[in-house]
Structures are given as structure tokens and as C-alpha cells.
Length: 256
Length: 243
Image (cartoon, rainbow over all chains, first blue to last red; front, side, top):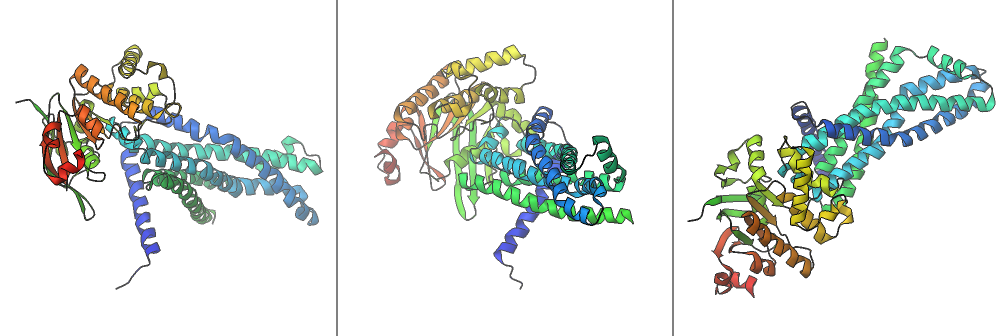
């Protein structure tokens, strides 16, 4: 008989539990009662309150990427192509993945900790006794809000990173705003933009559902709350890279 | 014979190999304060969580206000939960909501036709019952342990339940605050004629609150009687609590 190591067993068990949790999300998420007010509140908390951090990091990455690329591009005599190259890099990969990772760090951990703390202080039970389905109220609203807000944040982050790149270019030479963005958009095609945008919904879903799963099944008191927050970030970050890998393969299929 | 509001027959619940409830039987009568007394980890909290439908037992029947709650669908169970309130040991106040929002939460979930003035009136009445009207716009984190317990009690009262289940209402409180909570429990019972099942191992609370005491030992209802009857018992297992 095949004897599996304990770590592998617990990995398989947890993967199964996550899939069951996802199935429950689809089963309960689309049946009334709809928690519209809580969903809107979560969109504000998850989306609007993440914007400053996402904007700051996107702006810095835009400048840094441009400054790092410039010496190589100059040495090959193609520095005129910097806006085009930065545009493709940011829109296709850096904008979505960077924003998703920051989102996982900020929102994944906060959802994991919030639900974990609610679980250990019996607030989830209190909600159920009050005639509320806690899964709908807590899990469905947060996951949908994360799924919807991350693409919005990515679009904004892309714009801000490109603006940062525009400033980075202007440190060394003079390039007008209109000309910079003309060069960016002239080199972007639908196959750059659409898959990059679609995958962000999956990134958001991964961050939301993993944060909720880890918090909802938090155990071991306050220690468990810390573990939930921590593992929410780790698992959702790994999932983001896996989804990205799959998305790139699918986009490749459409390109040929 | 007083009306039975909760009737538990042959209730069994295990966690792994640990059987915490083993064919447990008990009845709660209308208007009485019944204390379930037992050691920590003896299954007292599991018992009242089974009654409110938070834990599913393996065997047995639980009839609450005439309905076997183990056969009810979610809607019918929610309907019963309007009439049965639960005071959690940890208070379970929602951290992200003010006291007002905490109290409004069950109101808005169970009743839909209330005007803002009616909701406000019910919130203030519940707060007056526990003497904490001034905390209405405070956050739970700004309150002391005793105040949080009283707010949690106000939240259980807001829907004017027929039955209140108290899970260790005085645990973690200082003796003076414990007495305040005990006095509130008695006041609520007199004012609203509620039937209460109180889980406790605090003997001062048991003495001041209980009209009957059920002793949960080895998963069974080991003994049932008044404080005077049980404190006079010669049974070693019972005497451990009263000495």
C-alpha cells in the first residue's frame, strides 16, 4: 500500500476543501438573499482603500523600470522605443501581477485576519443565530468585491505606472505627454490588453476566496488568526503566479 | 404542569472518539430559569449550540416551541431563532459595527417592515434595559468587559425572545460585574417572562439565578433539582460542585 507523507496528505485534503469552498461559493452566491449593501461596502473597503498603496507602487515601478531599461536601450540605439516597450511590459505583465501581489498582501491578509478573528470570537455563529447566512454575508460579498475591484485597480495602476514612465523618460530627454502615450498605444494590440485584463478577475477571485477560506476555517484561537492572515497571502500569491502561467499559455494559443 | 418550551430527548454528540453528550434528556418549562451545571469541557456549550442549530447532533430530538429543530429547513430554523436568543460566552459583538449597528443587525435581518423611528425606539429600549443608553454610538472596543456583556444581552433582547440561552454569562467578569449580570438576568426574566437556560459553573451565579439545576456529568443529565435539593445530596459527583 502506498503511504503518503503527512505534508502531502494535508496538502491534498486542503486542496479538496478549497474546491468544496469554491463550489459552495457558486451554489450560494447566485441564490437570494443578495447582500447588496455589504457588497457595496466591501467594494469601498477593498477597492478604494487599496488605491493609495497600489498607485504609489505603480508610480515608482513606472519610473524605475524606465530608468533601468534606458542604458541598455541607448546602447542598442533604440531608446526611442522605450515608451512602446514599457507600455507592453506594464500592460501585459507588470501592472496585473504587481497589483495582484500587493492586493494579496493587503486585502488577502486583512480578509483572513478579519474572518479568523470573527470565527474565534463566535461572531460568525452570532451572525447565523441572527438569521443571516454568514457564508453569503462574509464570503460571497468579499470574494465578489475582490474579483470586481482588482481589475479596476489594475487599469488605474497601469495608467499611473505609464505616467511614472513618462516622467522617467523626461528625466533624460524631453518628450511630450501626447507623443509618449501615442508611442505606447501604437504598439499595444488587443491580444496584449484583453487577456491581461481578463486574468485580473481570476487573480481577484483567488485573493478573495483564499482569504475567506483561511479565515472562515481559522482554528487555535489568536494564534490561528495570525496563521490565517499569513497563509492567505502565501497561498493566494502562489495561485496568482499559477493563474498567470495558465493565462499566458491560453493567450499564446489565440496569438497563433 | 407548566408548558414545556424546550424538550430534549436522547441527545448524542461526539467529537472523534470523545462522546460529550450521551443520550441526554432535559425539559425547559415556560418562565423558568434552568441552569445546566457541569465541569469545563463537559459539553454544556455543545448542548445549547445543538438547541440553536449551530451544531448538529448525531442522535436525539430537540423540540423548541413544539418544533423538532433537527428537521427544519433554514427558513423555518430562522423563524424559530427569532424566538430563541443566544448570549455567547465571548459576547460575539461585531467589532466593525457600533453598538447601535450591533443591535440593529438582528432587527434588520428578521424584520423588514420597521421604520427608522421604530428601529431606533427598539434599540434604545434594549439599551435602557441594561442601563447603557449612552454607549449607543460607541464601538465595542471602547467598552469594558462588563459593558460588552450587557450590550450583548441587550442584543439578545432586541427581538423580545421567548427563550434565552446563556453560555457562561459571568465567566471572566469580576465579582461585582458578575452580580450585575445575574441581577439583569433575573430582571429580564421577571419583566418579559422569558424562559432561560443558563450554562454555568459559577456557583454564585447558579445559586442566585437557578430555579432548577440540571447536572451534566458524563454526557448525561445526572441529576435534576433545586439548589437546596442538590446541595443536600450525598452523591460524591454532585457534592464536588457544592462544596
